[in-house]
Length: 158
Image (cartoon, rainbow, N blue to C red; front, side):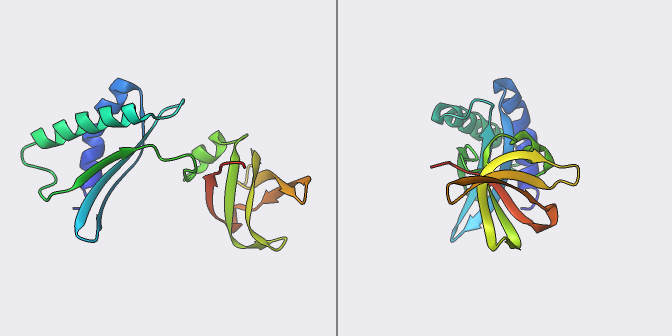
C-alpha cells in the first residue's frame, strides 16, 4: 500500500504534462472504512472544477486499465486544488510566495505571539522569514528565525 502514491505519480505525470498542470501532492489514506486516493493539482492561474474533472477521468481510466491492478481494494478518487490556503512545504514554495499574504505558526512565542499573518517580504540567506504584519493598525516588519517556524501556509486577507 505504501507505494500507491508513487505508482499514481508515475501514471499521472504524463497526463499533467499534457495539460501543463503541476502535481502538488498525492495521498492514499484510509478514513473509517473507506480508502481515498487524493490528488492535488495546480497551475499558475489556478485550477478549475473542469480541470479536476479532466484529470480525474483520465487518471481513473489509466488506473482501471492497469494489469495487475495497482490498487486492488475499492477507493474513492478525489482530484482537487491544494486550496487558497495551501501549505508552503519547502524553501522553493516559500520563496515563490514572496509578496503573498501568509500565516506562520511558531514553535514558541515571539513578542508574545505564536501565530503571525502578514505579507512575506523576504527570505534571508538563513531562511528566516521577513513579514510585514498589522499590529493594532500599525504596519511592522518582523524577521522570524527559521528554527521558530512550525508551519507556513498561504492565507486569505480579510
